Image (tube, rainbow, N blue to C red; front, side, top):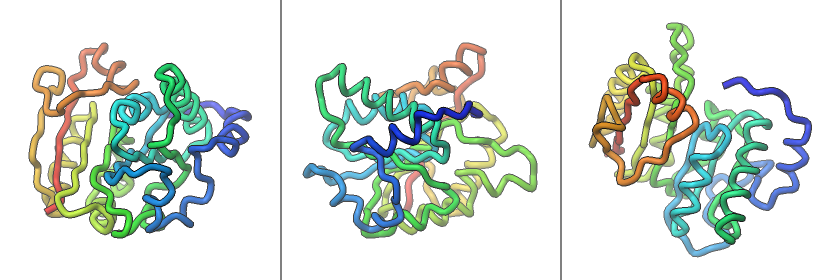
Length: 220
């Protein structure tokens, strides 16, 4: 999703208590960065405007979350949405961190010491042209990177509107030795999550009559 430049985003992010400006320095040390006793650590790759993560983290105070995106403007909106959600619940956002980074270079951010238990990938860029497909967040190249810090039996929760991306991703998962625990070609008619939190894209595509594809895969 393209978004206009927002001059306020960078200053607001740098002033935020839950934004991290130099995430590479926290590789292997993310657990210590949270000021709580939570053990589980979950990631969202490509968090966009952050509505999904804001609701997810607020409803699961026993889990620590890291949300990553590459665009300052997106992260600025995510920061505001998270602040609003937590403010309405009268809770401090101490179980969530956001950061700006290129997900293709994710091995600069995490290793086995971080013990990531789950990754969320929601409506990522499908990169339909053949020469660009290696950029997909679900491509085998990326999956092999995730395996270097995702715990054994750690999960990936994936949702998309794109039929071709979904079919290809199922192949990528199997090629990289992930076990497909659950899958659906119509998430809203065949739920596979304990609770499905709709993203902005999900609502938009659903209103257009496009079925949402989803799966849960596990590192074995």
